[in-house]
Structure formats: C-alpha cells, structure tokens
Image (cartoon, rainbow, N blue to C red; front, side, top):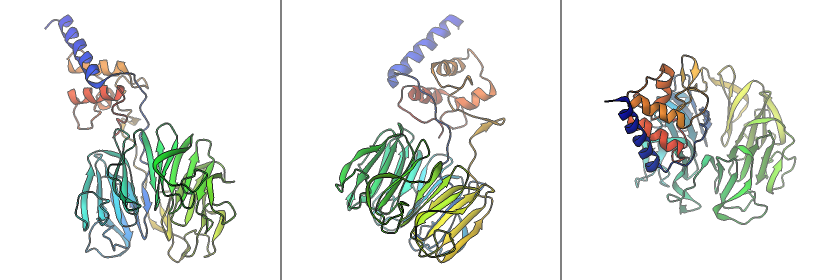
Amino acid sequence: MKRSTRISILSLFILAIFLLTGFTAYMLIDTIQYPATISAGYDYSLFINDELSLWGYGSNKYAVLGNPILGDRASPVLLAEDVVFISAGDFHTVYIKESGGLWGFGSNAYLALGGSNKGLLTQTRLLPRAIFACAGPTYTLAIDDNNTLKCWGFLNGVSISNFSVSDVKAVSSGFEHILILKTDGTLWTTGNNNYGQLGTGDALSHNSPVQILSGITKISAGLYHSMALKDDGTLYTWGLNGMGQLGINSTTDTFSPTALALVNTIEISAGNWHSAAITDDTTLYTWGLNDSGQLGINSTTDSLVPTSVDNGVIKVSTGTFHTLYLKGDQTLWHTGSNQLTPVQTAANVKLPSPITFNGEEITFGDINDDGVVNILDLINLAQKLAGIIELTEYGKAAADVNHDGAVDILDLIKLAQHLAGIVNNLDI
C-alpha cells in the first residue's frame, strides 16, 4: 500500500472516530490519586498494606470483614488482594481493586450491595469500573470512570438505585444526607436537613442536590454534621453540634458552613460524633465526643475545639468510637474504644504509588510525552496502528489507556472518547 493511501485511510478512520464519539474539544488528564488507604467503620477498621492487600480487624457481626463465620478479630486479618481503595461503613464494606472493579461484602439488608439477596454477602461486584466509593449506613455511593454517581440501597427509607449525578469527583455519606463534590469544585448536598447538615441556611430537606459552596477540594459527612475543605486550606463545618463535633467552641447547631480557626488544613474526616483534621505541618487535630477516648488526648472529656494529638500524620479516618491515622513512617495508629492514647496497630501501610515507567509517572493518553493529552496524541496512536510510525517505550505505556496490556483499536476509541468528553478519566 502506498504511503499516501495509508494516510488517506488513516484520516478517514480518525474522522469516523470523531463522528462516533461526538468530538468537541480536548482536555487535560487528572493526576492519578488513591485517596483512601485507611478507613474506620462503625466498630471495625480497614487498611491497605504496601502489597495492596486489604486487612481488617474489629467487630464482624455483619460480615464486614468478608466472612460471616470469621468472628470478631482483635488483630488484623487478610481480607482481599490487589486493592487500591477502601470504605468501611456501618454494616458493609466496599473496595476498588487494581483492575478498577468495585466490590463489597457484609450485610445487604438494605440492598446496599445491590441485587435482591438481603443476607450476608461475600465478594460481590457492584461495578466493573469505579474511581471512588463510599459505604453509607444503609446505602452505597460510587463514581464510575465517566465521573457519574451510582447508588445502591436506601436513604431515609427510599430507594436511591435510580439516583444519578454527572461530573462528580467525590461523595460522602451521612446517616440521612449526602455530600457531592463535583469536578468543578462546587459542593452539593441532598437529604434530610433537620439539624442543618445540608448547610443551606435553614432546616428544609431536599430530595435533589442543591449547591452550597464552591472552590472545595475535600468533603466528609458525619452522622448529622458535615465538613468541607476549601482550596485555600480553610475548613468549614455545619450541622449537629451537641457533642462539639463542629469545633466552633460551642454546642449550638449551625445551619450554614462556618469557618474554623484551624488554618492550612490538608485532610479531614467526620466521624459519627467527632471530627479530625490534619494541617500542612502534619499535625493531627481532633474534637467532639470523647467517651471512648476516640480523640486520643489521654482523657474521656469532650473537646469543643480542635486539639492537637500527634505529629507526622498523613491520613486520618474517624469511626463511631475510634480514630485511625497513618503516619509518614508508614505506621498505623488507633485510638478509642476505651484506648485513651493512640497505640500502633500495624506497620508497612502506605499509599499505593502512581503507575510509573522507568521512574517517570505515566500520564495515560500523553503518548508524545509533551505534558498534555490532545489531538496530537490521538493522531500518533492512529499512525502507530496504521504502521506509519513506532512509539517510544513510554509512548506505548501511555497508549494503553484501557489497561489491558495491549495497544490496539480499543485504546484509540477510548482516547477519542476522552477527548470528546465522554470518558473523563484514563487513569483507571
């Protein structure tokens, strides 16, 4: 075949892909992130170790540790392999595997794990591809690889299986309300609002999401209170405050987001009745209910304001009666359930690393390695498949956008869909 003929066929092929995907514009790819490596549930704990193995300990009353006959565990037990994301709920656990699939186990009494079997389930797959998930008390929230919110179970006695929201970056589940962080940084809330947990300035409940803030980077919902972190490091709280869980030096509920005096915050976590945050100097702060020593301040006295606990902390997760946190030396610490001060729970727990090639982080889709994902990368991939050019070794790694180990027509289609805005995330 002559080169001009091959180029003509290539041009027609690219045009066909554009027409099929509704090409409109190109966009930059997001940085790979694995936001959850530890998770505190109602009365159990989960963590991922440096081999991507999922471990858990605590109460197994509802098979939240994966096996109904396992019994309660005072020390960590292996639950699953190749796991990159976890979320511990009240009655069930969900996790994302390295392949991208969303799985879960535990009680399905409220159909939070899908299907119709209301018993105790083990190793149930909810989605083939997910980038974020949250195990709520009676429901599950997940974000698929198109940044669309998917739901299972019941919220306030009503099925939410048909509830869906697009352009979602993260979600967080309260007992009767949901926080939704969209890709543009706006925060939306929905559900019951009897304690002001929606942050709308009143006590009116909303069955559809309403926007309350912008410029938000992280969110966390407690039982009846909420937390949000702004891009300038300002931490906002609102909702129920009977135990001081808002950290505003009072026990008065607030119906609108209120800024805390704590500055330069980088991580947040809302438990059922207490809260935690990490500042940019790696100091962990806690406040709220402390009846079981969950604040880690060597007492059982509640705190109405953020109180420093430890240094060198990089991740924190709050349950009902305990708090988990991960330090920079990859040790996991636990406080609460009558443990007044933190004790080390496990070692060699670390954040999964971004995918790399020869030490260089891969930006999937950036085939020509120029720092952006655009039409030039699509052309290069099409030329490779047409036999016109050869890709560099890095280019081949970045071209495998569907992560199946091969560079083929399926990668070309997915990359074109990404440039058309149909597929928003090539990392997973």
